[in-house]
Length: 138
Image 1 (tube, helix red, strand yellow):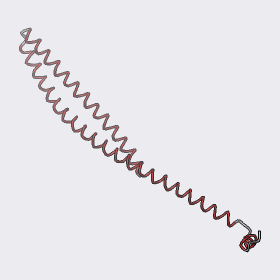
Image 2 (image 1 turned 180 degrees about the vertical axis):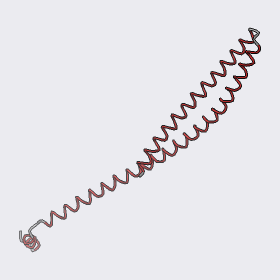
Image 3 (image 1 turned 90 degrees about the vertical axis):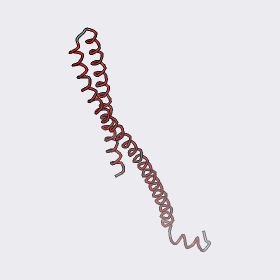
Image 4 (image 1 turned 135 degrees about the vertical axis):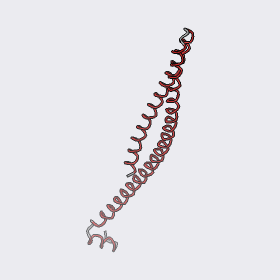
């Protein structure tokens, strides 16, 4: 049960990590796009193309709005990732505890079985021979 939960959590952690990385890449792309539009608008102004500059700045504003939303989503994804990592760490700790308990139980069972074998080997002796030994006759 603990192993299955851990495996599922690790898969979820990987998916969330991938999603976070994708979100970060998207934010970086939007930021670069906004910067590029700003540079193009500056160039348009230098070339006395005010309408083009205005259009580029308007487009930049739209990209910046998308960027803000993407950054919020990225921050939320980062929080989910941190929470999942914390949960996975706790599950890994629990799995180690369970494994330790199982190993101890197996070791105790093996010790008990070996003790039982010693008792069985005593029972294999001839009862008449034991009676003579008890009387002190070898």
